[in-house]
Length: 111
Image 1 (spheres, rainbow, N blue to C red):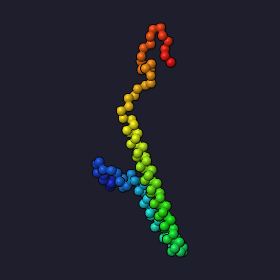
Image 2: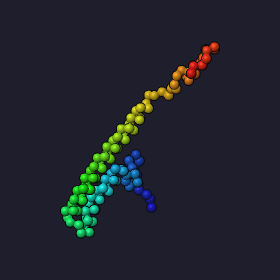
Image 3: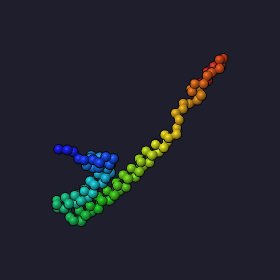
Image 4: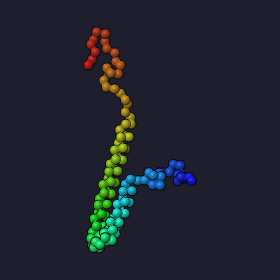
């Protein structure tokens, strides 16, 4: 049996084992927003309590999503700044004495 087919040059998807980390977390959070109230109802909790649980989990999910997206944007900005900061730099060493300048015959070396 052959494995999953991939298109050359295409971005890897969840079926390739390289899914979006934030997307995975949010999918599980949405699943739990539905599952936990259903289990609470099944175990005998009141419908109002289950609805409160669903709303609370949804609020936490929204807050976590906002924080994760903000963190991703910050990390992307740092990576972009690192790439730009290294461009155009010449790898020079410190002062002239370190770059091979000669000393005068009778003069002591410069510290």
